[in-house]
Amino acid sequence: MTSEQTPFFITTAISYPNGVPHIGHAYEVIATDAMARFKRLDGYDVFFMTGTDEHGQKMLQTAEREGITPRELAQRNSDAFQAMNDELGISYDRFIRTTDSDHYAAAQAIWKRMEANGDIYLDKYAGWYSVRDEAFHAEEDTEVRDDGVRYSRETDTEVVWTEEESYFFRLSAYQDKLLALYKSQPAFGAPQSRFNEVIRFVERGLDDLSISRTTFDWGVPVPGNKDHVMYVWVDALTNYLTGTGFPDFESESFKKYWPADVHVIGKDISRFHAIYWPAFLMSARLPLPKRVMIHGFLHNNGVKMSKSLGNVVAPADFISQYGLDQVRYFFLREVPFGADGSYSHDTIVGRMNSDLANNLGNLAQRSLSMVAKNCGGVVPTPGDFTAADQQIMAEAGKLLDICRGSFSRQEFSKALEAIWAVLGDTNAYFADQAPWVLRKTDLARMETVLYVTLEVVRRVALLIQPVMPGAAALLLEELGQTEGAAREYVSFDEMLTEGTKLPTPVPIFPKYESSAD
Ligand code: ME8
Image 1 (cartoon, rainbow, N blue to C red):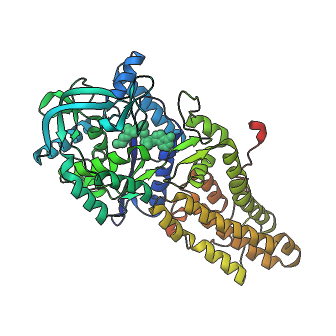
Image 2 (image 1 turned 180 degrees about the vertical axis):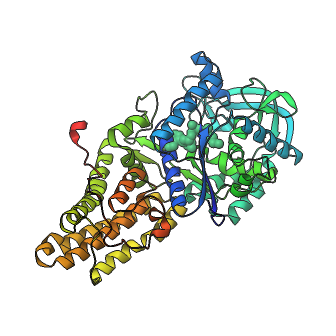
Image 3 (image 1 turned 90 degrees about the vertical axis):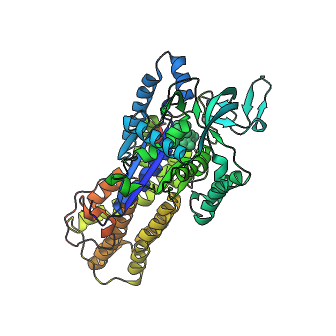
């Protein structure tokens, strides 16, 4: 990196490796990866972190059921998460595990800073705990159901009565400070509807938070009291600091990357990230992240994924059926990021065949093969541009700024919608100009039309790289845009160089064949 590059630190949640990854996990890393790639292409010095959250009672109970140690369980499934990231082409810079030794140091350091600030005290905890959620629930938020078991009304998970000595964090003291933060940084949480739920929750008042456990030892030890391990969320949230080098305040990476620019997380953990986390950081006198982006949940055919329904899809199966770039495109185009979304075979195939194979693949293939056949396989030489040429190039020219805006708000579907609107207009332009007719009547004009079309396709290919890195690279190759600056956004406004030799074009987006069903 060069010294003038602006740092950009982005994270996903760290997943519980008490099972193997599912499509919901894949969705989150794909979106975050697209964001990281966009920023890199736009000249930022990006640090992108993802990983696994390995402590806590849930891990311990699953390991006991399987007759292995929690460390073995964590290792096995953490490896499965890493393998998923590699299958998905995730460009993470660090895969953090909360069992990494530098993480223990960071978690203990933040604890000590909160303690030094007078926000941690020892008391007794008595209340309802959900192991599935790794969260406490107030009695009034629970109910006993027909099976005689008590559940959290909000999350539908079983709660158990827990009574033990515990350290507490003085969360109640942070209500006003948090509300002031939300007011002064209206984009701290997004999208607005999900952020509003967080704000309403804080407005109702906050109880102090139990932050240690004594009944098991699978966790980070509390400094100065060997009978306690930290509540898994104190340890887990701190992973974001660990990755920057904290508690070494002098480290280059801490100075450069903290505070984080965006934490990308799902809707079920918004309170932990938009309430507890900034409160812990305020207490520890550390700068706050700039944004918590809360995405929705993905449902299979509109039905919630669950092991008992047998509709949990393995990301690897999905990719082998539809293709990696296709899956990445589908998720980011189909579901406005932040909203809940659904996927089904038909909606995926619809997007693959209309958006990818027809609107983009066909346009690229038709224009490139005409160039191969009629222009000696080099970028053609344009003549004077007509109003129609100028209009379509101007439309494509606006896309970088549109995408910058949409990506900065993690509105991936809007960016893709804008790109595909230009592709729609370019297809209409191509049909109107009919270069295959011009081939017989006006070769110079044919060359101009092909040049303009390739120029739009180049801009589109540059902008879809974050979403479809593989297909975009092939397309750029076909346009003679080799690795390096030509593929970065500094080159967006530079036009294709006439006479550039182009390789023989091959189709990039195949139609989904129903025989593969
Ligand atoms: O919550 N659709 O881990 P996790 C979309 N360890 N996203 C989903 C999803 C679905 N169906 N199911 C889960 C944890 N997610 C904690 C995080 S961070 C310091 C600690 C998302 O494995 C979920 O919302 O249960 C979360 O952002 C991520 O996947 C990991 O979930």
